[in-house]
Length: 213
Image (cartoon, rainbow, N blue to C red; front, side):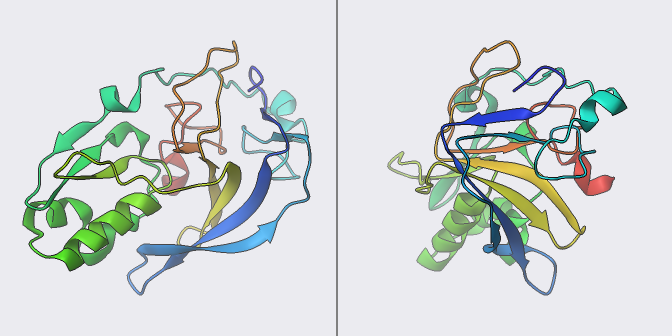
């Protein structure tokens, strides 16, 4: 990323717009592709939240005096996550990564299911909730220690939340390397959500500030 500026994406990474599909309670159950953006070898995504050409940067960060100093640690997921033991499977939970996508709220909630699940249907629900968590906060783990991580191609999606009528955050998938403004890499993860409202207190990662704006 560029200091106090946009995210610079190189390597021809595909970019699209996904919308959360929600149930009658507003909880997320799936994704719906709304748009695929033209392929570009290099592009710049707005990080300040003020571009008039979203998702791309239009230089607005210079006019608004955006301060994009990264405040997130470079800790590995295993160092951030706590392990919650369940009856049939376990859960890794790195709460500081949460972007409030609400996949974990269905069917009485992931944490409740981890504590009470006694059948294969419940295990399938937990696995679905965790795999669809865009930020990677939650990871389902079998009793044999296998992490049930989804296969995700290397691509970037802008996430549209119909409940709050906003596009945020940016979902980076498939183990794409992310570097801070000084070129220091963050540990590679399969699922990462980046701030694009400019107000996260855990930059460059989303901390769900956009939900309450």
